[in-house]
Image (cartoon, rainbow, N blue to C red; front, side, top):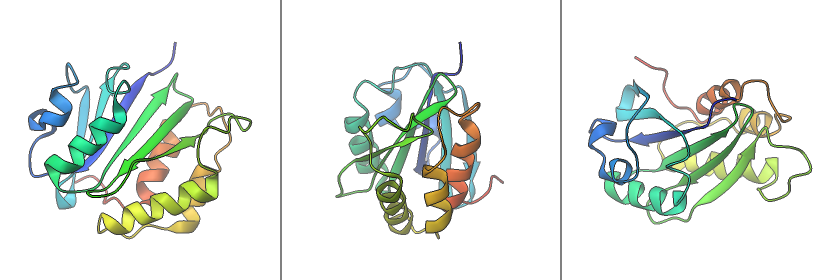
Length: 160
């Protein structure tokens, strides 16, 4: 059985263990990465953050006052990526999902939404790289590789 987890990406001056939008829904953080500019990436094992992920994103952006992103990893080989910014709606895209699965935005639409999210977040996203990432064929042997590429394409600073 592969990895089932949710990655949370947000900008906050607090430790992720102190962000109530997350702690109210999760039993605990598996690991986290602090990045320059108060960006945090955390991994939460299991399915607990998938149940009301739209509300989680809305609460997280309201609490932090900044855009937030979730990536729900499914069995290590695909992910559902969701983004939201304060005052905006939630968007959802597939990453390395089966090509015939039409529930998500097209790769071009996903790249456009992610690009806009990155700009709103004050980052320097790379549209071409985002399109490449969202065109990753699925299932992928380890979706954490395209997730890392997504974070880089969004312009998230490298870990410090």
